Length: 102
Image (spheres, one colour):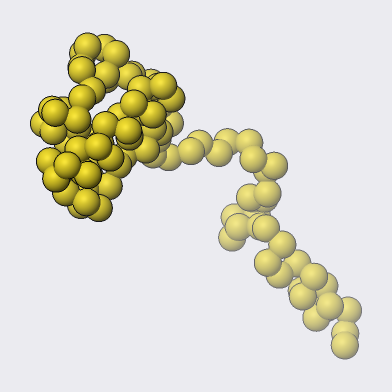
């Protein structure tokens, strides 16, 4: 193989654009697109003084998907304590037939 061809192969695909600029800048200039700012989740149960009780299926349905699955804390923003209460009351309401099973 001649030196010309070897030199051309070495330069191929090494992170250079057509303009000769190097696109391997170590992460500088990268801006994440999409969710750059997020809103802090608030505990709806605490803020709105909701009474979580198995006898109030209208309140419990706010924390369920349309298929009847319980929404996780990271989606609803409830505290761990209130999430445990919520799950307990949803399961009671399901057992009594006031909410659909998932």
